[in-house]
Image (cartoon, rainbow over all chains, first blue to last red; front, side):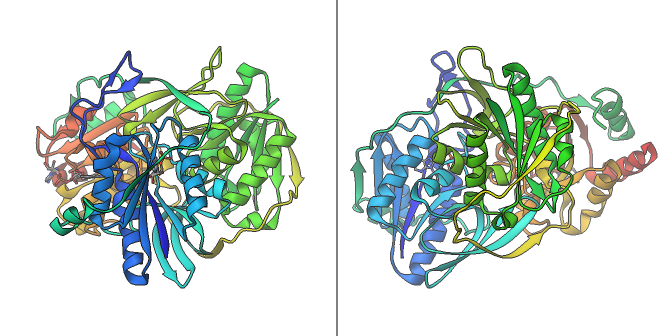
Length: 246
Length: 317
Ligand SMILES: Cc1cc2nc3c(=O)[nH]c(=O)nc-3n(C[C@H](O)[C@H](O)[C@H](O)COP(=O)(O)OP(=O)(O)OC[C@H]3O[C@@H](n4cnc5c(N)ncnc54)[C@H](O)[C@@H]3O)c2cc1C
Ligand SMILES: Nc1ncnc2c1ncn2[C@@H]1O[C@H](COP(=O)(O)O)[C@@H](O)[C@H]1O
């Protein structure tokens, strides 16, 4: 079973969000980067479990610059076999998806696993686009994935509930909570990751369809109005007559 | 030219988020002078109600293949409707169905897409859409440079506007490909409204000590007509079902009112709720970070405060 796991780099969840260059760029100063949690905890770990049970390989794919290499090495330390970095600063989801799809077309995989969204751009775009470029089925927001031969049984979140679907390989899936439990890389994994292959590939040509013109921080919150614990009814009164929401 | 809106349905009914998307499309059309066409796929009733929120026309795609949720086939149907109606802008709701279908369509049509829009696009000169990024901690203004544009609208982000038009309904049986995806079983939750669409949410955390104490949370939610949610440790310990988990790694919501009871207000929790219009925090610890994000707060013991709130809420109804 050949599995491709797409990982993206994201600022650590506790990072302070600030912008530079007249609010046109994210301020990376002092920011720690991690593997996007959905990609690491769910897509990657489930991919590894399937490989451990059925044999095969797990390849990591990232579209990004050389400063992503430490993040990619962490994915290798968790247990992936090899990694590919498509050497391009991602600016637009369609561009990223096209690179992923082009690579997957040339190197045929049984499944491409993505996260349900990145926690920085919050796109929820790349997985569906990769599926469309590959003309493969797309199962989004999957919370369980089991394989029997080349048939996958997947539980996915849909509007108002969950659904069990079946699909034969190849397919593209985006992973949500429930797929697996996070794994912490051990010392042996970290040592092994240093010598695992990380191949750098140059991107194919494409044209951007969107660009970020600027960023904006939400207005600062006003002070919190305190209500006495002895008179909680006053809270409801404020919500009805001041905030006018109940 | 026209603005096309994918109006999704559940249990044969048009979804609340679909009405929001149609109203959003109609507000764009008001500026651009285009007409508004809503596309509905699969079994659905009462489609003329879409006129109320601004649809001039409804295309009902009746192909049987669409009775299951088949994102690829839905994208094919919408693409045909878009081409037939010369659509310049295609609108989705940024809910679970939009998140699946919209990116497929964007790739097939090579259309620039902005997901999670929180405001109407700016259209004089460049076409720019404001969206939430960094899990609600900031906004990005995204410029779309293609002729056909796709936008998905965050649920509950904008007030719906009524137009009270009469929408004509046209049945279409578009040719669709075959899907390799088979739906084996559906587990629709009995709760009526998905959390992402609830206007009022009562949420509780580890401060509640154990699952047996959720009775008062449910009572409060019921008295207010609110949905219930929880913090991540609470769903991890199986005190509450996983679909109630809000935050960075759970669902992101933006209700009109979010009441957080016994939740500390960790940044990853706030990431999923900080776009709520009004936030209330109830916590024994006056230093709890949630008070910094809240509009109203009570420093107190949930086991004393919440039962009193339930009584007061019932008295108010
Ligand atoms: C990558 C990552 C992603 C994460 N994603 C999420 C996420 O999506 N959602 C999420 O919620 N968390 C998430 N977390 C976890 C998050 O950091 C916090 O640990 C979690 O939100 C804490 O939950 P809590 O507030 O319920 O519990 P605690 O932090 O234990 O807080 C309990 C609170 O209850 C108060 N309290 C105690 N007794 C009472 C009482 N009788 N009455 C009133 N108040 C009382 C306490 O003062 C305290 O403030 C994530 C963490 C990481 C690292
Ligand atoms: N630059 C990237 N390189 C590789 N995979 C990516 C990249 N960006 C996004 N992805 C994958 O696509 C998923 C959805 O991303 P997004 O559409 O940006 O929310 C992520 O969870 C990753 O699995």
